[in-house]
Image (cartoon, one colour):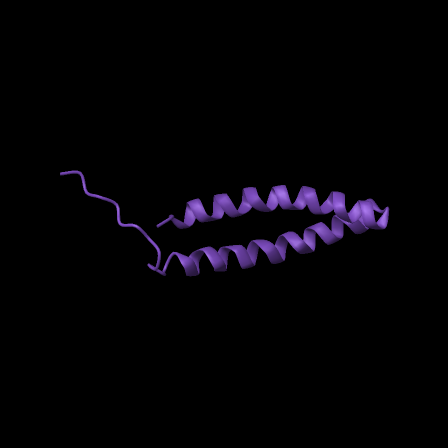
Length: 72
């Protein structure tokens, strides 16, 4: 299970990559840095929130996990 700190770190790094990508896509489709940036920011906030909820929910589900072998 990931610690909350690890989950947050992964989520923030993922969102930074997504923010940059979305800014480029927004700029490409609108021709505006401001509109592309606003689209990216809204997307990042929503995406970060959903990702954290998704990760924390899956950490509570044991289905499909392979138990670690103990060092004996």
